[in-house]
Length: 611
Image 1 (cartoon, helix red, strand yellow):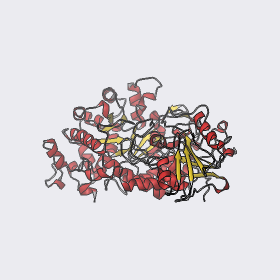
Image 2: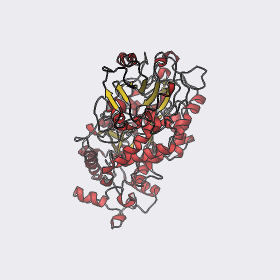
Image 3: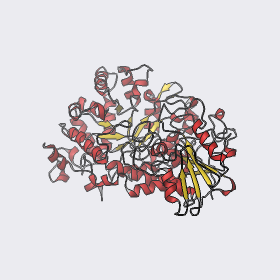
Image 4: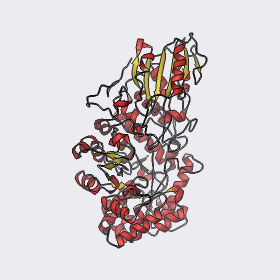
């Protein structure tokens, strides 16, 4: 199936659905009235022709992105908006793949009803699968993928995500996060592939997976390298904080993954909320225009983060000065989720009074429209429903299970307690993360911060253990460990963190297991059987004091919906091959701890046992 013919519903079909007369491209069987509607012409020619026909208001609309809950289809037509997004947890009703496709097509028809028929582009944070959609395949978060050190697997995951995203109509993914997390207190540590730039750079293969070899092919989705630049290096791991580094350090640690993504043709770059030496990135002309667009030659478009322009002056509510600062710094599309009308008013005024040159508006439009043409949105603007059945499909879940198994890092295995015997065994399972899809998936799962319980279909770690055990093996579960005795051959405690996302995930104090986890493990230990701890977490935790009492420790990270992959390693169906992407400290007092800094770790970066 090639997207040339099947990638999206054609504009001819769209016109019929709209009940309106659209100017048809020549591929639809009629000569294109204008050059921009002719797919046989070079993209640059089409862009130039379209821009020559656009009013200033149409150009300003292209630079504006509104949140789906704060915009109507009529708004899209009236204000010529260039883009719509779903924030974390923002979904249509019903929250199904078809529900999403129907919503997308409704917005797209409204965009096509404008005089020039410029399609909108729809963005989502599909950061570990199409995670806003109930029923989608949820892959391990980036920290787990970093543990695999497997660029081919990560590219395959990008391809699978692109297919599921395409099946809902969406054509733009705010991923991958290429942050190099340098302090595990940071609540976005799990969105990082690792603490050194080499890991993230090698795994930019996900960009190729998402976009395909070139934009516009089958299930091609625009990828976004984020968050530019230095978001993982803030002092104290403070989310949206200040990265206090020399330019040489910034370039050596945080820039290489973005360079790698640009070499792979990444279509967009999202600016970080954070600052560099006190200056907010959203207003940093040197880093955005000088370094990214100039020196590195990035030819795609730059998008702001959610209301990111509002942080430039440190006061609540964005001003005209902040609008001009961001746009002049090089931000091409501005994510103004709710206050988009006010943004348009201020943007128009700032152009009118000469604070923003028209050349900057034209540059932004050229970049945005180029990607829309390259994606094929002008020819195929509506959802290709041939991809819709792939959402949560068996092939993608099998790939996710493989990724889970490859991401497991075996940190301790005293006496060879692992792998567990599949047959004639008696196993006790406990812990708050053993039987909870929400907990094992982490943040950015159905809702922004994630949640507990059966948020979406999948296999819990407990269900995976039960399925892996042979018919002659007994598996008993009690969350708190109640009921265990000395007749069990092994006890598995599935413990660790509960879901969080940016901001709320920062851990400024203790990074230890909570009281319930410690109590559960203590209950299991009292029975005198070997205790295997499976740690579900978005970062290394402070466990050095407890580790001597554990027979085995498996870092499962945040595996997503396919808990069978954890069981595959516990039973030796797949040997553990994962390596720590972060340095694992002996105490929270060591934070930040990173390879090469002279601090003695509990486990160095790159550590991992096997059977």
